[in-house]
Image 1 (cartoon, rainbow, N blue to C red):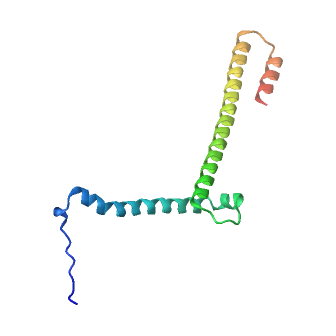
Image 2 (image 1 turned 135 degrees about the horizontal axis):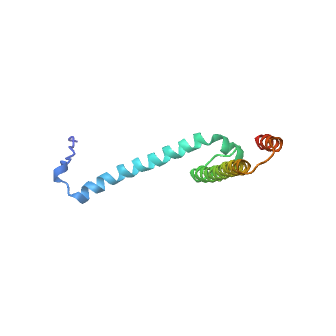
Image 3 (image 1 turned 90 degrees about the vertical axis):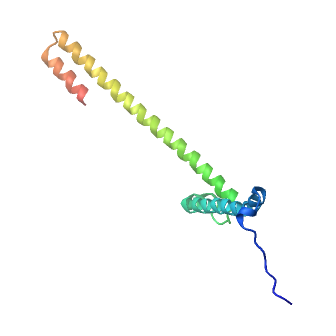
Length: 126
């Protein structure tokens, strides 16, 4: 049997449709590899979360994505609660500060006994 030679057409002889047909499986494999790599990274990042949700089960890709979404929603809610709490504290401090300014202004305009003024100021500083 004589050796056969495979004739590969140079790129410039292929039509765009043929080029796309050849390139499509390679591009698709690269896309799947990127997806799988990202899912694996999510799995590693959220290991503790997986142990909490499904301690001894083999995780499918869909499970990994579901747990990741759940975890991100939970973190988002915690972040909103923290920012609301900080905002409330800031509003309280700002209001208290404004109240102090008004009280000092009032005391400076009216003749109030020094003893009363001192008691009031020490009370505000507590």
